[in-house]
Image 1 (cartoon, rainbow, N blue to C red):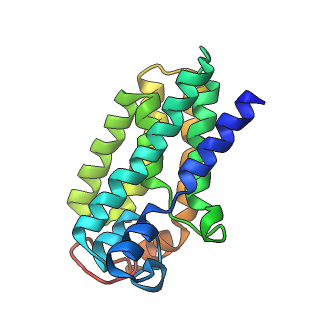
Image 2: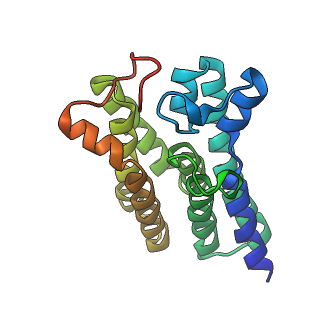
Length: 201
């Protein structure tokens, strides 16, 4: 029962829609009605305010990090399986948030925070991949997808346990699946670059 409560807590932490809340509180609008309609940091940054976007990014990452940290401290599992489960459920909570009729964000920031807590070296490697890919292409979506794919590979490179690698792979599948529209636009040349504002992402 204790383990189940921790996992439920991870889901509900992930489900907190910070992007939606920040825009609603600061501007009175609904971020789902502008830009791409996504509640994540990129759409808040482009369609609402830069400060709001940064705040959304940090808070979304923090909730993923906290979900893993709580599982680690409260369950003290040497196999790290519960930490990984908490990370995945935080991502699920963000993507399928109960607070917005199960229509949430794409899970990139929360996944970044969660997986940084599990394997800082693999997390930093993934962030580096994001920075390089996004810096060259100016596509946030492409950088996010490549960084997500890089995490389980980096975890393997840094000799993390199999459960960490598999958990990273599962998180990657969830996040990439949520980017299906971006992937289509990338292939058809219709994806908007970072410099553009008030556009779908």
